[in-house]
Length: 344
Image (cartoon, rainbow, N blue to C red; front, top):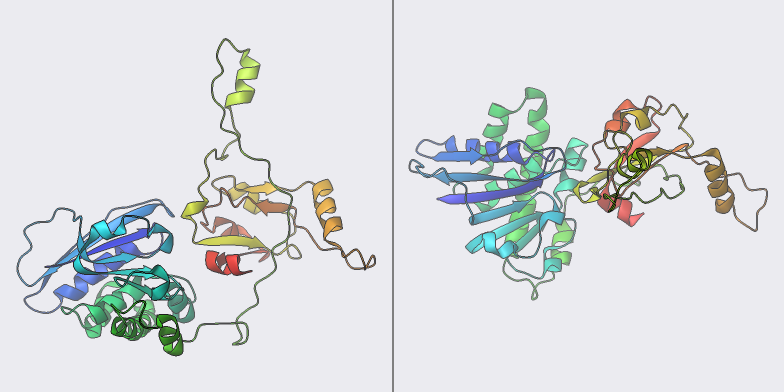
């Protein structure tokens, strides 16, 4: 039996990947597969598994160790990961870093976000790892991944996702050729020489707007009951929060973050109203003026003032759901990947 563990976050398609892998493995006569998964809030860590065998699968319980452990989000690869891996097993992780950077020959890195963004226009890594497993697992062939996509995805998604599977197969096979030789082979150079080209500004991709600088949001305070009796009015002021206001940081869930094009923002506040977690806040005219003044070059007093949007995003609490982008009618908000944000 071949067992696969899927680690991801709600919204990355790990459930779909577990189901597609099970379908791909069961299409040939005599092969059986059993995927298991459940619902999770967008951005929340989740786990799914797939079992594949050529005989009936009687044990449908969850698995603790697997032949392949897939991390659709690099941030979920934490200390102790090896406890989930069977002897001789392989870890696949969504990362733009070379495999050698992880310092363990059992880890293969694939830039799944990059592949999917290039071919799908969005960082959806699930079918990338479906393709990788079709290349690495003896019980699967790329054609099985193609058939599963045609059988279980909408027709309009077939061609692009099949292209993703093929691209992932090629890169996974290249990575497998260097598997077990971390430290003796320059995997970064080897992988970089034949990686699929990704969209860049030079290739005609739309330029990312520069985020406007906004005043720092006051730190959220988690209030606790004080000893002794409190006046009801004081009690309310120390224990109540406005609707949607979070009191624990959850930025670790985020794969993408919103950025604001201050020049396009009209101050309609729809993003502020619709943000489910109160992560978008208003910027006062005085604070905006202070930031704009500080951003002017001291040697060029006549330089144009840098625009500052009347709203800003508290990245400590934003989970990257994209609701703000969907409700903005003026295209003043867009989503960029966390890795791209860190580079800028």
